[in-house]
Image 1 (cartoon, rainbow, N blue to C red):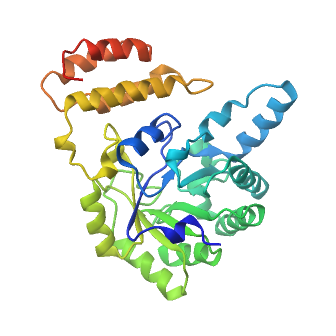
Image 2 (cartoon, rainbow, N blue to C red; image 1 turned 60 degrees about the horizontal axis):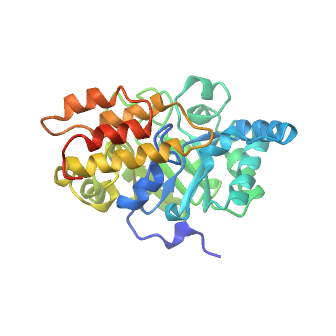
Amino acid sequence: MQSFWEKLPKPFFALAPMADVTDAAFRPLIAKYGKPDVLFTEFVSADGLFHTRERAKVKDEENPLMRDVKFSEIERPIVMQIFSGKPAMIAYGAKLAQELGFDGVDINMGCPDRTIEKQSAGAALIKHPELALELIRAAQEASPLPVSVKTRVGYHYEILDEWIPLLLSGEPSAIAIHLRTRKEMSSVPADWGLMKRAVALRDRAGSKTLMIGNGDVKDLEEARVKAAESGADGVMLGRAIFGNPWLFSGRPASGITPAEKLVALAELAHNFEKLSPPKSFATFKKHIKAFVSGWPEAAELRTRLMDVTSAEALSAVVQATGLDL
């Protein structure tokens, strides 16, 4: 049976998994206004899902981490991204993804967060290649879902020639490559020249794994150019989604009116409050900064909106702007 990855157009365009951004509130809005070919959840701890789920069963209460892996049908195909340095926990996460109805499972091998690296997870796996391979195999053996990987070009320095063939030997369905090292973080431009080399390594290996480039892509037009120049099967866009759920529709950001932005922001605020258990509304305020910009009165309105503490209060301020909503 074909996985959803094999049915995608080429090049295809995916939304990068981002903590506290690509959550159960924002993803449906993106799917409504400009759906990408593939959506990913925020990354979630496989260990955390296991331990909180077991405790929740004993106490007969809702598992708090389950809010991070809720999704709606409009978001398909959707991939659950998990992290762990333990094969047994990755296997648990892959099984859970199948039970919850996800279309795929992705293993995070690129996050630079120190607390995650201390668990031998995220970008730390670049320094532990055999463990990385074990994790891929654990997910594949635990579930029939296609397994993908999101990683970087190296840890302290670029090691594509060693790292990519090793990952390919695990036969993941797709590999998304953030085109910087862990050490570089986001302090230097993404090196798209490396993507062409990664694709060549895949071709040389005779692998069917799809190769996805990620880093500094601002819109679909640029994504198409990057795919053509590098030979990538797909392109993953991340930060460009801030304040712009229309990103994957192809509409230029300059053509989106202040009224449209405010209507979408209010809708997102109400989605956010429906999360159970809810995240702090303070977490939502980064969206206010992103959506309310680009027109003369935006700064003053943004200041007022930063003081609100609920979706209802935000909607009231938006309605009082006098814009044609």
